[in-house]
Every structure is written in C-alpha cells, then in structure tokens.
Length: 301
Image 1 (cartoon, rainbow, N blue to C red):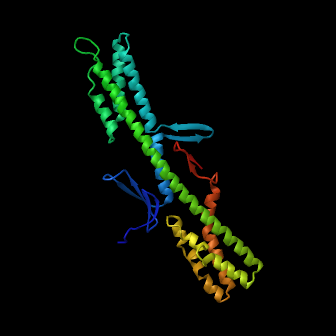
Image 2 (image 1 turned 135 degrees about the vertical axis):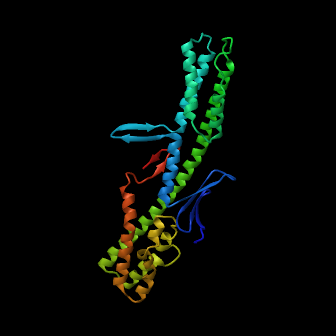
Image 3 (image 1 turned 90 degrees about the horizontal axis):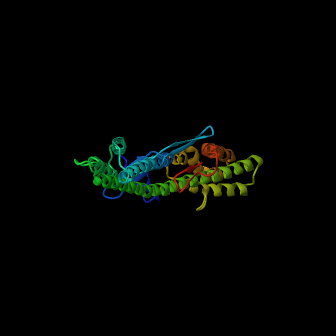
C-alpha cells in the first residue's frame, strides 16, 4: 500500500498528497475530520456546496432570479416567528382562544422545522420549545414562562447564525486559496503554452544553432525553466498532464540538441503544446477570465 505524504500546503487545513489528491480538514482538535478529494475542482465544489448550505443558492434562469434559502435564512424565519409569538403573548390585549391556538401551533412549527440536529445551539432551542408549558395555567392566567422559553430558544438560534457566519468566513478564505491555486496553475500552463507556440513558429521559419540552443535552454535549462514551472504543479487533475509522456519528453531536448535532431525537437514541442491545449481551452471557455468569491460567499465566474 502506497504511503500518503503531504507534498504541498495550500492552507492550514488543505494539503495536497503525493498522489495529487486534496486532503481537507474540518473542525478543530480533538474533533478534526479528514476528507480526501480527488482533485482541485472537487475541493472548490465542496467549499461552494458548504457555503450554499449555509447562505442559500441564487441562480439566474432565463432572466429571472431563483433563490433557494440556506440554513441562515431558515433560522432567521424561525427567530422571526418566535419573536412574533413573544410579542403577541406579552401584549396587554386579551388573547382569544383562536389566537392562543395559533401561537401554540407557531411554536410547534418552529420545533418541527428544527428537526433532527447535531448542532448544540439548535438542539438547545429544540429542547426549550419541547418543554414550553401551556400558555395559560389552571386558573386561566397567562403563563409567562412560556414566552421566556420561546425568547431563549430564539437567542439559541441566533447563536447558531453567529456560528454559521464565523464558519462560513473560514470556508470563503479557504475557497479563495483554492481558486488562487487554480489560477496560478492556469497562468503557468498559459505561459508555457504561449512560449512553446512561439518556439514552434520560429522552428517553422528556420532558426540558427545558437537560437535553437537558447530555446532548449529556456525550456529545460537553468533554475526558472518552463518545465520547472510545470513541475511546481502537484494537484490533480493538472499534475497528470505534467507527468504525461508528452511533457516529460521535454527532458530529452538537450540530447536531441547534441545530436542536431531538429525534427525530434520540433515534434517534441508539438506534442507538449497539444498536451497543454485542453487546459487553455477550459480557461478560454469561462465567461470571465477571473474566478472569484465575494465576502458574502457568492461566486463570480
């Protein structure tokens, strides 16, 4: 079994392993959870899914806007419902039997909407709502403890919203780091692609031995050569392209140069150029050149 090792750190909680997969950590010690994701795009999608679960999903469908509420919006509605219950219950106006029934049903509705939960704040709110006594005591007087419990439940739900905003900010920052890495990789591919294209044009037009030597040196010679830039990429799916036969054959260019085999040099550059093209095409297909995420967790493509 191949040993898993971290070869690149993207953030404190996102690493790339030696197979190019993303290791994403959630939570804090001692309750740290590790997810292994197959590639960079999967990691970006996972973060996006978390943000949408928290803050909702907005889509534009044929000119019309569709919004699917997230947990934050649902909690806000529950809090508003509980506040309306408390406000009416504490008003000086007498409550009718029908109004009492409506208030009790509103409390039950919030409790049912909370549903099965593992979050401590929502669990606490649900327990409070389950323990709310009848709105009137045996003498027909308003039981003000009920309104107090409902208000405390609303405060618990408000704490959950605060927790969501704190967590989602961390998710947004992680997503930005992942997007930054994707854009860095695309810039490297684009730079190498353009340089190889330029070299191929020169070769087609004919070059001197001196110029051919300079071209080979720029590709595989020196510290900042083009191949070194490509090999700084460690994450899937891009690392597979870097490790491909077409790209790794660039290492043989100095041998071909010594043998003065211009045809092999040209063929090697052509194959490497074609291998990079799908990444360039993907980049061009995006509606905008920038892929961003706002402070509110909205993606801009």
